[in-house]
Image (cartoon, rainbow, N blue to C red; front, side, top):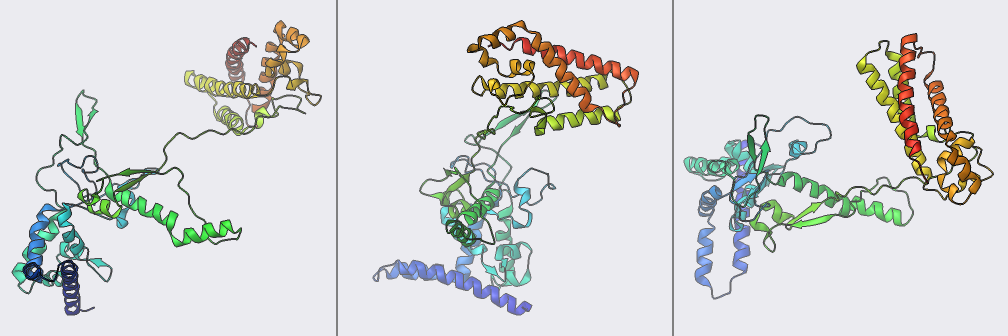
Length: 431
């Protein structure tokens, strides 16, 4: 489009917008309201309407972070943030929107028509963006008087600016953030309206879009489909503005005053069914050590020992911590087995060593007198500890892990210390 044609295009769009608003208002008049009709026609002459809109634009602010959702009567500062921090992994914020940022308009409901005017679009570009860029064709479309057109364009372009000095309000939220020197920063949280709008648009499309509907229909009919769909269980709705959401902001009005909140309850943990270690001669090297957490703990210890040639306090501390984590996994496994019906170790398919049966199935002592007598002797605690130590030593030994004499002595001391704690835990294992 040439510059002349582009200016004509903007002018036609502006006249069409004003004429459409006039016609809607005229349609609401009674046939005998001739005075009101004349006043409306005069007020909607393009030059008169644009002059009034430019004046009212001083009461409007374009923002990405707004105050009124915190309290509808708050009168503090709103902000329009266009320069964002770099992407931070796992941190979602307004900076994530980048080029897809949609600005919100904060104003009285009576001035929403000015925002609608500035949202006129031509070839995918908004009138406001063109005026802020001081585009000559868009500016010229406002008036044939160049000076007047520039004055109005400056007024419209100012809606991104903060009105007055930054300020909070008694009805706004404020947080005192402590500093290392004993002082505080006073923080005034704002509502991230642009981010909320983008998220709600995505959720709405995922729930009610045509592609999502087609995918759900295919699922109901048991048919394949090229695309999947997303579900958002237990959404909550927060309302802003009551019956007049337009009094909060433009985007809030578009959202019908709704702010959709994702479920943020702690997850309900569903553990895999606990099964007795039948057909295993030992839980060490068997069911216990096949778990992902145990394999990872052993892998870390083996790797640490393989690359550590020195022996100092920090190394001994790290080594003892890793062994302690492995011991914790052993105790947690034993605790899970106690959720089973007592007596499972009497099953004909249970091949565990006697000491491990006495350790892992304590409830059996309530109904099996012979089992209770053997368990009361206590020798099984030492036997279990030794079996655990033998398994751990054999597990970490490899061609890459060759402990020198000093390291081997220290490793034995670390392991002995942990086994002492291990046995103390077993001593507290009462029926």
